[in-house]
Length: 165
Image (cartoon, rainbow, N blue to C red; front, side, top):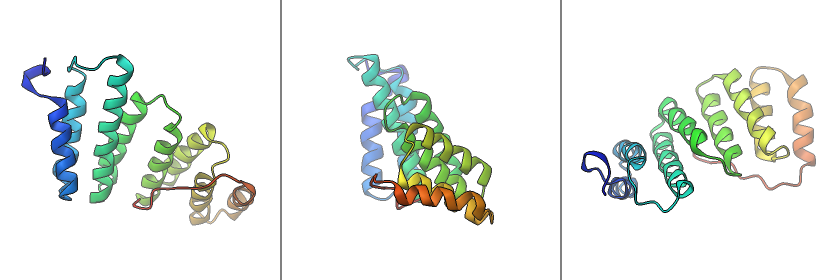
């Protein structure tokens, strides 16, 4: 079965990927969103876990396309959907990405909250620690930032944060 109203989530996803390669991120995001929405009605997945992982990827792809367009609010909406479906070890990275978007939108309280959740999930990640310290420094709160930067300096974890955010 191809899903409700004849939509095929795999074809929608492929169209989104094609549009991404063409750097048509606005349309790509819409196709990824539609694919994720209709994927729930597609009964071809072998297991519920497979289906959830696919939807997670589709929402993540939509968020990434919105980031490329500088549409932080829309990207945050998609990241929130990723968090609703994601149970995996990479959930901290989504919260970190959300924190970076909130930072760009100058929503410091939300950025701090997102980075703190990321640190609850991945307590010694250097990149997240530095991002959190950066928010405090922008607020002029060196008292909060300096200890976090010291911890980041002692951490041995390799830091990889999205460069496009």
